[in-house]
Amino acid sequence: MKSKEPDCISKNIKKYRLLNDMTQEALAEQLGLDTQYYAQLERGERNFTLKKLIRLCSIFQIGIEDIVEIERTEKQDNSGIRGEIAARLEDLSPTQLRLVEKFITEIIPYTK
Image (cartoon, rainbow, N blue to C red; front, side):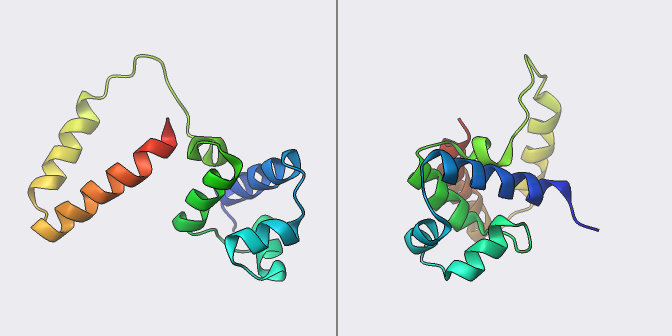
């Protein structure tokens, strides 16, 4: 069974492509992809990589939350999740911690 999230992502990418008056061919070229492969991505038959999603955000000049529809809640108590994250970080190796830090510094700016 297919997940709803990839369909939502694909639909949003198509929406922004059309809003920017771009053809599938033009966007595929900017992403360095074959047009047929890109068409499969846009139809939800394949999944976009995180790298391609970030590139799309750059092309469309939007945040990643515009594509993946991250839900925002008002005044959410984050203390529980912060504690869970802190506990998980304690068990990571230095290499894993650097990877987490890189993820945070490179991805978080696209979610605002």
